[in-house]
Each structure stands twice: as structure tokens, then as C-alpha cells.
Length: 364
Ligand code: TRP
Image 1: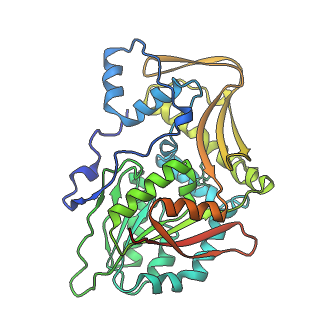
Image 2: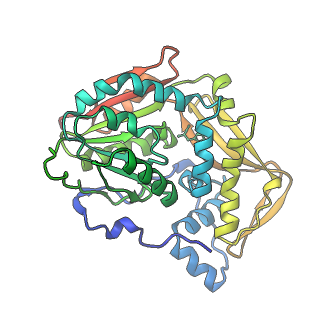
């Protein structure tokens, strides 16, 4: 059994400073939130529910009228590997489009960032895009990758240390949606200048939050990052379902495996008995909310047990595992403005599929 420890490693990090305060966690989609009905739990299982945020979210989420589990739990070691495979798929245009845009605009981002920047990356995963930025920056002081998967982070840091031996790298294993603090900036190595903070948030991860939660997260980041901070954020911009559905339901079934890995993880870590063959992966486009939804659809009526507790699925009932919002440019600008960020620059591919934005703290 491999439950997450109660106190994540970052809570004890010596370089946590109180100035970097973030709210406890991003709010969940309010429309989907119905409390789980109370029911009997075995004493040991009850204790584990209290002990583990993963267990709590799963038990709560399976008890909702419309079952849903927060998307952060998709990213264990296996999930991070599968997600990495998704980013290489033909159908998944956002990754290669973002890389291409970053290659074209890195010099301009570097000019905006100035000398001695500290780069803080949210949900860094494999950090595959980070070298595009680090290589362009003038004498970066430090790199702080934050990711929920310790394994993905360790792999990324090992290869970045080889590639950037002089750069100070301070990884942080944490769910950035629940951080109570952002790390204080590490001091630059002797002889290196200290410049501004550059938050790097690629991969259209911002789209995985409801608009309200995205405003909340960006506002907390604005507050925590300080006056002269920059935020570089990548965001999917397509609203064409003919492009979107294959991107989230690929031919080879990699995205299906990524989605179903959540059930496998529940089986592994929370004594679950999900039969993976009795759930189908589904991607839906909700035109009104402008989001792709990921679901796991029950094949037939069935019961599952997690931590000794039973949950029923009706035939065709779904477990909602992810949203990916596709905001238009005007909407995106309005959203970041509400969070206290000024929209300075952006780059988009010629087909208007994806954008990289540079935001700066707006004067209060
Ligand atoms: N940030 C990515 C996105 O919204 C995450 C993602 C890509 C994803 N493919 C997925 C999440 C499939 C769940 C399932 O595009």
C-alpha cells in the first residue's frame, strides 16, 4: 500500500517563507459537489480516509450525485508516463504547437524576463519544454520545478542537472493546487545576479481548472509572486470538436489508458476492485461551457468497493475525471485581468490553435 504522507515534503522545506501564501486548495467545481452520504467504515479504513488526501477525494467523489474525482490524481508515476506518451501523439496537437511557439518567442520572453530570473514551473512533469526557456534566459538564478509526481520530478531534475550544471535547481514535490505556500526564492549561486520571478505554466494546465478556480489560482499566484513577477502561460485556443475529440480520444488508446489508470491506481493504493474492462473512456465536447470533458463510463450496472466501502454504478453512469477548457482570446484576457494580471504579449500559431501569453502583475 502506498498512500501519500499526510505532511507533504514541502511543508518541511527550510526555504519556505511565510510571504508566499497561497490558499489551501483550489475550489472544486461547485456544480458537481454533493457531500458523500455518511456510511459505516471499518476502523482501519476510516483512519486511512482521514490520513490521505487521495483517499478522501476518491471516497467523496464516488459519493457525489455526479461522480467525479479531481484530475490531479491522474498523475502518479504511471499516469505521468502515459501523459508523456500522449504529448507525443499525432492527434495531441497542443504539445508540439506549444513547443513550436516557445521556440519562436523564447528570445522575446527572455528579454522581458531580464537577467538573473528565477523560474518557478507549475506541474512541471518531465520539464521537457523548460530548456527552451532556460537556454534563452540571461543568467537564470534558479529553477524551481513543482510536480505532484516525485518520480517524474526526479527524472526531470536529473537530466536538467546534466544539461545545466551551473543552474541552481530546487525541486518541490507538491500538488500546486493545494500549496499553502510557494517556496521562497532560493538565493542565486555566488556571483550570479538575482532578477525577477518568472512563473512558467505551460501545457494548457490552466484549462484544467474551472474559470472560477483558474481566477482563484492565478490571483493567489499574483499575490505570492510579488510585484515584478512574470507569468508565462500556455493555453489551448481551439474550439473545433473535429480537432479536439481525437486529441482526447486517440486511435491507439493511450488517452484511454491514461484515464483508466486512475481506476488502477485506486485498486493499487486504496484496496479498490474496479474491473477496468467494465469502464469505457469517453471524451465529450461541451460547446456551451467550451470544455472537453473526460469520463469513464460504466458498462452495465455494477458495484465497486474502495477501502471497504461500496459504490453503485448504473449502466452508462460516468465518473468525471477531467475538464479541459478552451477559452477564446477575449475570455482568457478577461479571466487573467480578474486575477490581477496584465496581458502583455502573446504568440499564436497561424491556425489559431494554441497560444503562449506573457502576463505581468497589474498595478493594484
Ligand atoms: N493539460 C492537458 C490538457 O488539458 C491535460 C490532458 C491532456 C489530459 N490530455 C488529457 C487530461 C487526457 C486528461 C485526459 O490538454
